[in-house]
Length: 368
Figure (cartoon, rainbow, N blue to C red):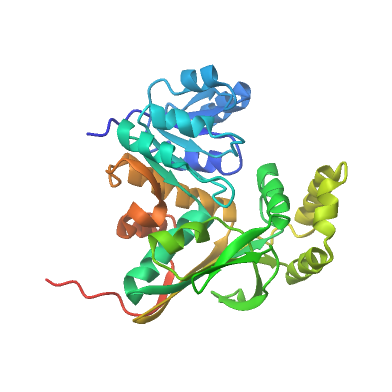
């Protein structure tokens, strides 16, 4: 039986991490540990949250620090980017439960050796928590369960520049803009770049019809294997709309690649994003649409709301609870849509006010 010991939230005082900790702390008193390099930040947040929440120091680039931080822990939530997967490897070696909101599956996929080690140690690893992947992955699963044999999955995310983003999110967007990657179209791999392939997507009200651009979100990585998709695409829409059009034009001109190589570009980019966040403060809508096409028709699962950081935390907590409550029993390294039961996941979203709109192909009949 799974031992319910401490839940370690690495990067727990960050934008999303603190929201995850705040959600879990009342239901899991004396078991939530907020961790990061700055112990003073961790302990301060822990004191604010109460419920026996504790702070702990961890340096994910230092093996002894990781080992010390894992003492008494049964589940790890990583909310920070890992240049090298030392924390993930340690969780596997100790046979822990683990989930991660920054999997970067386009560039960094678990090796076969890591998968074998996880099975041997009893570790239960869920890669891809949050909004996309995470909630988008489960929406794809819901759609796939309705349409029969899956042919095509397209996920689209709308983010607002006036929303709350941490430094890691800003860096992520900048890095992904210049990342060459491949997409699967009718079973064939094709080269793609972010902010190419513009198309129109209908988001839930009041967002409506928007232009969406190809983007290397990690949810599309697994759909061919986990759900049998012959075509798998992920797209990004920015609000205000002019920002997406501007970035698409700059990408076509090769400007982001030139900027990436220039000294001081990251700092200037962060300043620009910070100014735009202030300029559009309060404009914090997010949207998510996942369309799944298959032999029984098309299913569409969508969601819209305010505050993508809140939605990301809700999605992550739903996976944490799936792990912590033993709903994911099999050891190994998994993507969300492979193994997480969709019913309890959607119930947990609904309990936090995130109720998706499900349209299209009817739910499969279940015999009495």
